[in-house]
Image 1: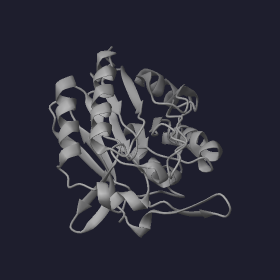
Image 2: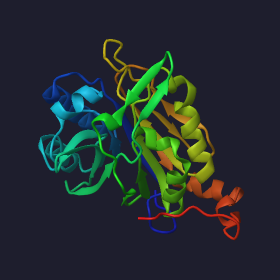
Image 3: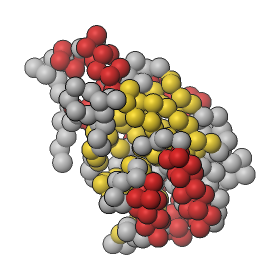
Length: 282
């Protein structure tokens, strides 16, 4: 289905809620198998979860870290090309110049890398009696926004904690993104409280689709992910949602509906730029 502008008006998105083990080669193999399955079911854009090739935790990042390009990104490039899809490679621990980053790569249908997003906001939190975590013990932050074009729409990228920063999503909206994708691993404290709420907020504020991709929940892991990979439409409705187990979530992204919502409630043209603004500095 084509929109008047020549862009495709809808496309199928698949979110792969992967069960991540301690064996990198198994994670890569299973991830690629599920990407093929999603493609066979008509998905044109497929996304993997945060830290899909390694357990999540500051004690694991150094051991599992790779250069980019490297083993994991090579596999992603190959399967994107084989399946003729856009593949958002969740995130992996990346090593570059002696520093470690939490990095998401995106590959196009020709296998070329279209974007590389290093997590901008590091997850350093302390909720007494519930959870304490400090990514900055091992990771360095990224310093840039990351967007890529598809024949359907422009897509903006964030990783997990990036979703809490409304200004980042607003800038993506200003730059023409209609879909925001956040691979993320919220936990059993922040997940039930804020995972869906934040997605709905980002979607409604910017009249965009928002998709989040979590690892499947593993109660035996040192960090237990919430799961519940989700897609929210620009009206703030949850249109697809996983449980806690390994699964693939499918949904059709309808850009005609997005255009209708923006027409009905034209907040983007009614903003008072004379009074306020959010700007991208670099």
